[in-house]
Each structure stands twice: as C-alpha cells, then as structure tokens.
Length: 477
Ligand code: P53
View 1 (cartoon, rainbow, N blue to C red):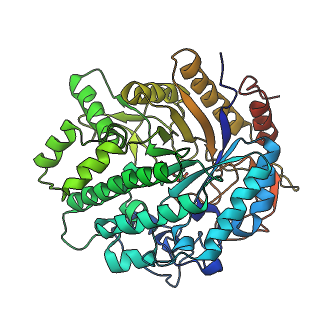
View 2 (view 1 turned 90 degrees about the vertical axis):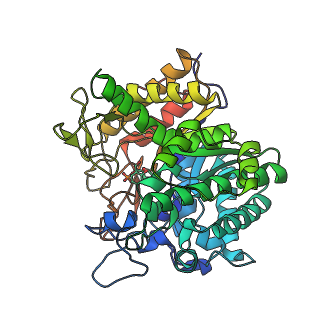
View 3 (view 1 turned 135 degrees about the vertical axis):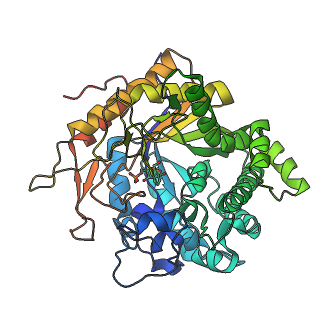
C-alpha cells in the first residue's frame, strides 16, 4: 500500500515566473516579458489589450523574476536537500530560438538548460520539462499572429527536435503545453493571440487550439522516435465541476463545463475530436481548418500520461446571476458554501482532488501526474527571513492525503506529485510576488524590492520528511 518506491516527489516552476535574465544569453523577447503587474494585466493576457513591447509607467515582473537564471545552482541544491526526486521546469522558447523562426538554435540557451539538467542529476533529481509554459517568442506573434497561424506547428516541431536530440539521456519526462485548456481563457498567455477588432474570437481560439493539439501530437511522435525512453504528457488545468444543485439543468451545466476542458485531453489522449465537440463547434458556426494528415497524426501519437494542475474545485449552475461568487483562477466562480477559500478566494477542497483524479483516471485509463498543486498565501517572515507557514503545511498535507486515498482506496495509477512554486515566484494570474507558494522564501516584493536572498520556511523540513517517508508521515510537528 502507499506510493510506489519510485514515486516522483518534487516541485514545479515555469521559466517566465522564476528565471528572469530576459535579455541574457542571447534570449529573444517573449509574450510573457511584456505582461505587466496591475490592472491591465488581465486584458492583456486575455488578448483584449495589445501590449507588444515595454511601455512607460508599467512594471514587468518577469524581466528579473527571482533571477533563477543566476541562482539555479543554489536553488537546485535546496531542492536536493529536500530530497526531490523530480523538478518540473519549463524551457523559455526564446532562449533556444530567440525569434522562433530561425533555422539554427542559440547555443547559449541550449547550454544553460544542459547545465541546469546536469545540476539536477547531481542530486538524483529527474527533470520534468514543460516545453512551453505560456511563452511564445514575440517575433512569432508580430510576424505570424501566434498560434492562430499554422506555421507555428513547424517552428514548434523544430524546437522539439532540437530539445529531444540535445537532452537525450538527460531528460525523459516531457509536457507539451502547460494547461492547454487555458487558451480559451487567456489566449495571449496560452497562444500569443491578441484579437483584432470585430474578429470571431471563438473561431480564432479553436483554430489555434487545433494547431497546438497537432503540434503536441507531432512532438510526441518526434520524442518517441528520438528516444523510445521518452514519456510525453498532456497538461490540463483540472478540477471537476460540481452541480450547484441536483436540478438536472445544473447537473447538465456541470457536465458541459467539464467537457469544455476534457475536449483537449480527449484529443491528446484518445486521438480524435470527440462527438460532443464536433456538434458544439458546428452549432457555434466554428469551422476548423484541418488537413487530412492532422487526423492521422492525432490518432497515432497520443500521450503516455495525463498531467494536470489542481488548486480548487469549481461549481456550475444553469442560471447563475443570483448565485454568490468568489474569485476563481482567472475569473469569478460560484461560491461553494461548504468550502473555505484562500486569501485569493480560491476554494480549498482536498476531496475535490480525489474526485478529479478519479474522473480523469476513469476517462483515460492512463497514469496521472499531479504537476501543480499548492496554496498561494501572504507570508510574513521574521528578521531572518523565516516563515512559519502552518497554513501551507495544512493545505498540502490534506491534498497529499487525498491523493493517497485515490491510490490506496480507488486504485488510481499516479506517477508523481510536484507542488507548485516550490520556491517563491511571480504569480501568473496577478503578477504579484506576495502571492507565495514556496517551501523557500525569496526576499523579493511586487515591484522588485528585496535582496533575492533564499530562506527555508517551516514547510521546507516538513516536505523533506514527507518525501523521506514516501508520503507516510504527513504530520506537522
Ligand atoms: P497563480 C491562473 C492564471 C494563469 C495560470 O496561479 C494559471 C492559473 C490557475 O489555474 O495556472 C497555473 O500564479 C499555471 C501557473 C500558475 C499557477 O496556476 O495565478 O500553470 O503558471 O502560477 C498558479 O497563483
């Protein structure tokens, strides 16, 4: 019983939220660089407001972030000290191909990740690499319109081929697109898409999604050709919807909402557009330009495992205008009266993780991998930088217990667990530093103040013990 001996415990980050060094090592400008903190952030990430370069009067947190570009040895040593078996990180596309459409990669960028992966292996840490975590070179956005353009598939394939070849033997776990379903809610972040006046936004989003889905299948094909040891996963922003009531209309609404997310994974895992999606697209007059070879590639190159993020559960109602709301991941969502929420209004629901795992496993029958889970909270350090983050320990232990129940009680197959933001980093949703997830405190504030000093929080030793005991001891002493 319990977790298998080779269960992959670890933590997760994304290049744009921790690396910084935005102009170093020959790196090109990317969409993630030009997204400021503040009230315009949301309209920019949703593709409603165009900001293609730095503008006066804005602060751009990704430019330096927590400067992991220069601190990675120190940071990985700390991950090693906690006993990480895996570290999930992402590649900044524009470090490898600064503009995105070059024929030859940038050696300095390739070397940076090679050093980083070697550093991981020093501590017995297996890298888990997200090929794109919300980043897209700005040149591909300005010249090609981002993922709305089919040509992006070719550029992405070139990137993948370079990565799989260069890092053969160093990396075997790959994720193609972070939270691929976020393209519908944050198209500039997910696909480098900014809408033109009067354009059919749904049409553009689903066409871009199709390109990403084909690119993901192409990547899976290339990964397996270059090294049969490679394991490729899709990545879903998950969390099952609960019906607001047992009214059949609410239950139906919850099912429809779930399908809106499952759509992506149905294609990536089962290899074809599901019937409900074809009907829905047709009903909404969305017609997807699909090449005959797309159908083949999708069918023949499905993913090896299903990875997902889980923070909070969701509620759906057929008619929600009179229903109380709370802040959600990006948008307000219906308040669940049975749950407490985080300081950012995300509803805390460990059992929801077990439910989500069961839903995913029932549907796909492939190994799962929880690659994001955690609590964003305001930490108050003492003079030495130490944080007593019992609230975080409480959140994580309850979720790890729920994951254990899914394994022990329900028989769900799971490869590993990487908690989000194992070291404090910039929030994707808000651009804040003060929304912290880490076991390691970083002295950095919302507008770049601070020394960047790293300090272990109370949760650091707690997580170390969790890993040491392979998830048997979750207690907070
Ligand atoms: P933060 C919201 C907005 C953007 C990305 O979110 C998101 C979400 C939540 O689903 O997804 C993931 O930083 C994402 C990470 C992100 C994490 O959620 O807004 O993959 O990049 O940091 C947490 O608190």
